[in-house]
Length: 103
Length: 183
Image 1 (spheres, rainbow over the protein chains, first blue to last red):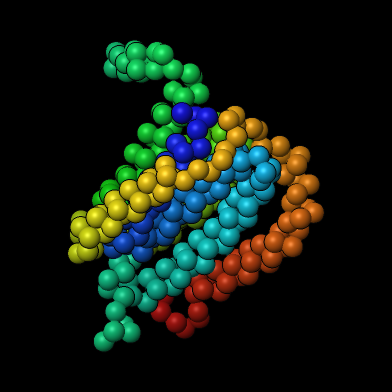
Image 2 (cartoon, chains in turn brown, green; image 1 turned 90 degrees about the horizontal axis):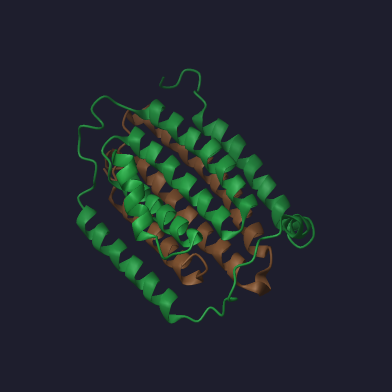
């Protein structure tokens, strides 16, 4: 199994589905950010798996995975800063209470 | 006693298999269980800790896959930086009544159905497609990676560095407490 590309891709798909469930279902904004991290990790896993199993790609898969990691770090920095800024005004981390633009 | 029993069961299960396969199954199980814990547990601090376990298992899978540099980067970036950042944000935004109240939105059932469908569709697509992979997995050469990073990928590399700088400055600006604003 560990020499099979399909196994890694299915594992990555499962992790992506778990992350999407968390993003859609959780109420806490930080939980949603953690779910986004899970989804990014799933995509990274599939990228590295392609890089490790398809000879034409060579080391490109690993390089792209590094780029994804760096962009994910930037994304989580800005996302958490936004959550903290909103928390300072609204006093709650729950996203369904952020309804200032709906009223 | 329990640990000995567990190891015995594991050895029985994986008796006929390769050790790499056994490791893959164990790590995949840890990854999926930790991922499920991240999205389902009530206490958000424990969600964060389960996320660290999830990232660690993923780093081990990278090493198993023959990409040790990516595994090391995963440990440094995700476990060392992003998890700590998220745990700090959790501590800054925790209210007393948050864990006791409802964890899921009202659309959680629909979300569960949708994500199961996503998983099934991805699995079907993966199985149905011929990816033309090589029969053997090969090691990702770190030296080749470094050369690629500074020849073909040098422009994306610079873009990523600018994005990181902008993200850091923007994060400081957004999270900064304004004088005279709400505390």
